[in-house]
Picture (spheres, rainbow, N blue to C red):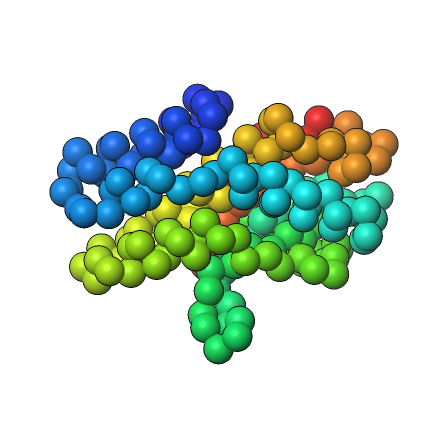
Amino acid sequence: MEVLDSKLPIKESWNRIINFHESIISKPYWSSLRQLDFETEQDEICSWLEQLVIKSPVPQNTVAFWVGITKMKYKSKILPAIYVVGSKSYDKDNIEWACNPVYEPDNRYALPEILAEIDKIIKSDKGNYEFFDWLFPMAYCSLTFDEIIRSKLKKELFLNGRKRMFITVGHDEGDFVNVSTIE
């Protein structure tokens, strides 16, 4: 992911992704996707993450976190969601390590408003929805978590004596991206 590797602020990275797709196909919703308020939600996600590990301390044998992207039923609606679990093993090339978590904190699920907004915007495009429903949540979550880790997170809460903690973001169906390591 060239955009992720650039380590640019999320708004700039996100706009590069939108610009690329807009250069391929004209859609009326590109400007709506550019207007999303990533910075406010990053603060909320950062706070949620920090509260998770404060209320449910990470076991010492945990070496990696999986940030799963899924859909869940909430108040009779199916909404995009994320969750966090931890594992005692890690392999940057094979996500099987995330299948047997040793850390499953209370309140590990969140319903980010931006994911719901993205879903609502792209649902109008029935011909491209399946592809964009895979692409944009993955891009948003990867960029968001990477920037939070690099610039906002109280890392000592997660490390607790460890040198580093690996973080991978992905769809439960299998696609994933390794983001910045907490160190």
